[in-house]
Image (cartoon, rainbow, N blue to C red; front, top):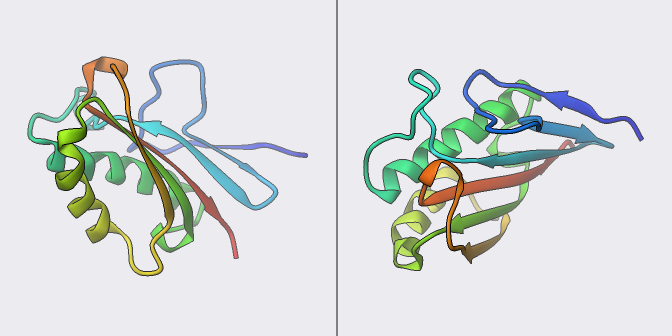
Length: 126
């Protein structure tokens, strides 16, 4: 199996990992926090704004791989406060078309950089 790294100027990595890896036609995108690529800092705002930034960063990785949101098959969302679920869910619904990707939303104690949200996804060619 060959792994091809995918790098995007809209994504950030706060450790030794790739923004994405393609293997056998499947693209695995590393989790993205709502980091503004222009400043390198977390965006200021509510969870809806931060969710949008996470997707902007992730869709940039997909674009670097020659893919788009329609190729996404699985999304994992991590929230430090499950009271943010509804606001995140509204942004999620606006970023995808039916049939929506499979998804898990997991409540966690903390996330990198002090973020309240992180999102990762898997996409497939074809």
